[in-house]
Every structure is written in C-alpha cells, then in structure tokens.
Image (cartoon, rainbow, N blue to C red; front, side, top):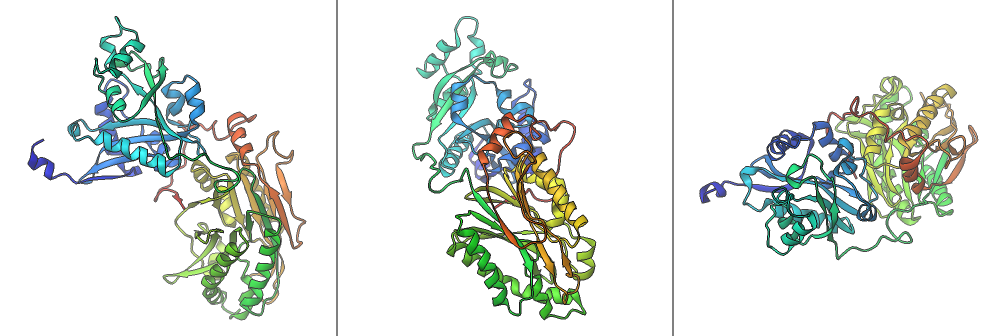
Length: 517
C-alpha cells in the first residue's frame, strides 16, 4: 500500500460482535481455503456467547480486517495431555471452555490478506496478553501451525524442523512469528489438525506466561467454592410507613447475615403492603404511586448490603421510567455496587390491574460467589432465558415470586426445578405468605420457598437442598457446593448441557446479547 492509501485507514481494536460474522466469514474463507473455510455462524456465535471478552478484532473504516479468538481452559490439563484442535473446539460447540479456567487458549488468529504487512497480528497478540493480565490468568496457550514444514517433512523430523526455526535457520510464517512474540514451545502435537497438509498435520503447543499472575486464593476475594445463601419467606403485613417496612427488611438482613451468609433473596413485590396508603379504587394508579418509593428503598438496600457485608437480591418492586411501569429486581452487592433485572414476561393479571410492561434485556451478574441470574416469577416458566444465562456461565438462578394460590405456586416451583436439572445449576425461589385484605389484587398469598439442585448422586436424593414450611414466615440457610456443578457437567450420570444437539436446535436472543454485569 502507498502512503496515500495508508492515511485513509482508521484502525480500531475492539471486541467482536454477532453482526461481524459476514466480515469474519469472508476473511476465513480466504485464509483457510482448502482447509474447510470459515466457521458457521452458529459456531462463531457460540464463542461470543460463552466468552465474549476473549473474542478480539481490528476494524478498519467499519469492517473487520483481523481477529483473534480464544476460550478459557485449565492450563495444567492441556500442558500435560496431548490433544487435537477438535478436542478444544469440539466441532464448534466449544465444550473445552471452562468459565473458571486459569489460562487463555488461542483458538484462532487471522488477518485479511489485503492487510498483511501492517503488523495487525502483533496488535492482536498484544491485546491477548493485556486481556490475560487483566483477567489475572496464568498464561496463554495454543496449538500453533507449522505450515512451512510440509516442504521438509519427507527428509526432516518435526523436532529437527522446529529447532532450525528456533535457530533462525528456517523461516516458518507462523512459528517464527509466534517465537518473536515471546511465546515458547512446550511440546509437539501429533495429528493436531488432520486436514492441515501444509503442517503435515502437526502442531506445536505454545505458551506465554503472565509474570503478573497471582494465584487465586479461596480465603479472601475471588469466587467462593462454598457460598451460603439465605432465602426469606416474607409475611405480607400492614406497614403504616416506609420506615416500618425498612425496619422489617433490615431485621431479616441482620438475621441472615448473622449466620455469615453471602447472599440473601427476598420475594417479588415485597413492598406491596404499602399500596394500602394509595387509591385502591384505581390499582394502576396505586402501583405508580408505590413506584415513588423505589429509589429510596434501593438506596436503603445498598446501605444494608455494605453494613451487613452481604449481597442482597431485593425481590422486586415497581419502577416508573419514561412514564412506563416496570417490575424490577435489584442486586445490591456488598462492595456498594448495584444492578437491575427487569421482569420480561408480564402476566395478563399484572397488565390488566397495574399496567405493568415487560423489560427487554436479560442480564447476568458477576458476584463474589460466581455468576448469578435473576428471573422474576413468571419469567422462570420460559426455559429459553435460563439457557441463555447458563451459556454465559451462570451457576445460581434466583427467582423472587408472588403467587396467590397453590396451583399458581406449583407452576413456579415445577419450572424452577426443571431449570435446575436442565441447566445443571442451583435455583432458589422466594415467595410471600399471608394476606392483605385492604389491598386490591393482593388479597392472599401462597408460598413454599426452596432451594433446588440438579438431580444426580452428588446432590440430595430429591434434588431439594432445603424448603420452607408452607405459608409460614421463616428463612432458609443453604450451603452450595459450586465445585460439584463442575464435576456434574464433566462426569455426571447424564450431562444435559453437553448432550444438547446443537446441530438440530438452538436458542437465539434476537436483540442484543445477554449482558454481563
């Protein structure tokens, strides 16, 4: 390229998006002509869904021109065992990805042939190193190709060829570049990519060590392997003032935190008793008036989370935004931060009486006990939502609910149990009991709060970690073993996540990706 053409470039380093696939396909079809060409769109989207941070690209004037793809793995497993490229990508399913892994595994790096000579590959490698340091990962590893070896394979063993490349006696377009970027050779991988005839099917396991890596400690900071959660089964009672309501909330936060719990879950619309202070002849108007308390209540919850050193899922409460009424649950972390999950599916009753509308975004939340999801009541009856969440690394699903009759409760309970089994995760549900005679559309409540587990030998025989006495105000305290989930997903009697037939079906989120907070 001449100087005039180069001055027209506008290079931007960023994360890959689903919408970038046409550009990715064009480049891969050119780079890997004769080796199968580009990945399918489903394979590409699986990478972004499982580990969005690891998918990096460079765009020029709005088009992707280079990309680096990666997953998370446990370095020791790949350093000590021989493996093939397909063992890593598993036919595009990326089952080798471990959300708790300690190393980046480089799946691919490619540059549009028209942009070779601009050192874009080096930019991508540097970005990977920065990501490795930011995520406090031990290393970057990958199986590198040796495409120059095909010309020497009849007269030279791969070990001899590799040594000559290291000694700069032979130039290999891939290995020489990787060695110049501070990667070192761990071992030779036989039959790494069978169709890679240029490399005579050999690969080389390469490694870059993060000198800033600090081994994760379970005692302080990081994800806890055995978090304790508390679930509040809340009694609907009359509160004359907001302070009365908050005093009752704080009583339960204090009680649960007193048992060194890491998280407490409250039920849906737990502040509904305050509706009695507003016009009961117009339930929609009353609910909008109740929403005026939401900001103050959220602030109080955030302060309690800090004061009592506990993460709080507030149940839910109405929120008015741009003259639209939503049902929203807040996650208040003990570090003082907070996030929100809006109820997506509104029941006919909620729409008719209160004028509630559904939100449009599904969130997954990072906490010090792992990644959690929140689905408010009716939302848990839609399995697509939890499947999206578990594909992003969720291990605990929290379901604040509000039901008036036993049959309504059983819909929530049965669906929550199904979500635990099909997604191999823990599910906690929290509901309200009692009655509010003077509050329209909130007359009676029915609840039996519980914590559900997957169904296999390592878990309780009935897949129930704990359950409350029906229609009685109380709390549950449950210790969760997150490492058991990892064992189940790899060695369980059945493996629901691994056994999915992705070549036959998939769940597609039509708006933006599931957001990670």
